[in-house]
Length: 165
Length: 416
Image 1 (tube, chains in turn purple, red):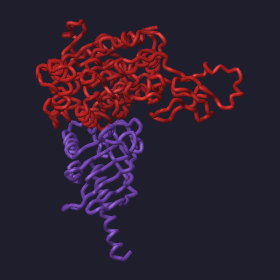
Image 2 (cartoon, helix red, strand yellow):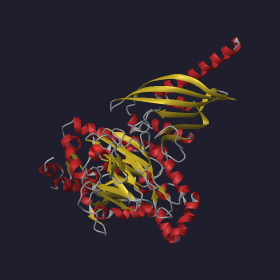
Image 3 (tube, helix red, strand yellow):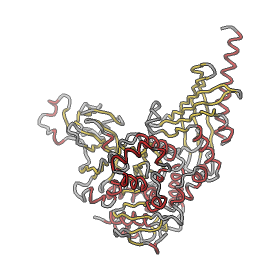
Image 4 (cartoon, chains in turn yellow, orange):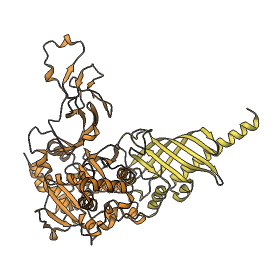
């Protein structure tokens, strides 16, 4: 690989990582509007249940939000009456193993792992997930077209999951 | 719990907080309720083919629901009859027999022991005495499969009583008259006693407060059904079964499918099939009335567009298994049912995440604060009345339902 190519690749990897870390920080700090602004107009936010490869059009998912439902989720959090987030969960997540899996035109498929520590009135809960993103480059840089969160325990009974994961 | 304690702790207008927080009471409930009365386990449509099986539960116990080669449904306990190993580790599948990986004993999906390896070591042993544990009574009502650990007792029809008509109404929502449970279950866990969930399911008082956030941003119309001016009624159907009967409101509105927040124009295929199946007049009435909102004691909650199966695990731990209702021959309706169910229920649901928050807070309240000792359930006691069928009813937000649940609970706990 030539030096310019290597630099370009490193720059892209860094740009993607910075995007993923920014998303994680906005989620941890409950900056709902800034998080919502990371989505494209055709965004799809998906947390499957009972396995990672179910058909969300046929089987139940924990979250299967199109763009308007993402907006509704954010609106609900803003009402001040979303009891399960009053007080808000204290969150601290580590995102790692950020890897560019595929690149086609202006779209990037990215994989990452996340460990999330949640502290709320019930107690302390650790969540673990494999995340897959489809990012698209537009005028404002990278945006999320799709985020799939594959919880390691999505086949088991789960406590309420009302923060942005 | 001693019989005297149940009698003492459940009063006409209040119940004692220890009923939710005491571990010994929970153990007594397992014996007197969960392992005795009829408990909902699964739906026949979850086993479409012979030799299908699916893992279910009755309280903390895993129960394997199987369909044998003759089509009959069995409820088997997941424990090898040899040394107690968990026999099946799959959630569902298709097999005529189950082989224990520990020593190779093999059981038919009827529970009978088929054979053991190196059989000469068991000379003279009677295999018929070494079958799997099973739930002795299994019965269905319109595909809803219930089990009872009591070898004798009231029949399922006697147990369901008037609640059977709610299931009939539910099935009528399908042009083919059948419910199908095919979308898989979300499993939502709460650090709370199971009875807080049962009570909440037909509590018409909480929605405007617990669900204020989603009602204020989504135009659902649900909130109005549970207001002080609603014509809906709360009803005690007997045997612990209760309902919020929303039909008076839907009839007042008088528009088919308003119960589902949609209209006939948006689901033309479904409406056409309903007309063909029931005739225009009856179909119109079914589509105006909507599906029931009924809590069948102790663990099946039919909530208009989904079913919840409540699993009591410990005095302070309960799992709600929830899935979208699907109606045979109604694909366009079913798609919307799945979408709405995914939005509203489960761990991240617009509605249920807040319900679960209240379950957990009430559990902490009765556990950590010792005064007042009682939860007050007297709302609407002064205006309780009998309907034309003789059932106790109240206004939309009255606690007729909770009182009905506890009356039955007390009778079960007092029984010898």
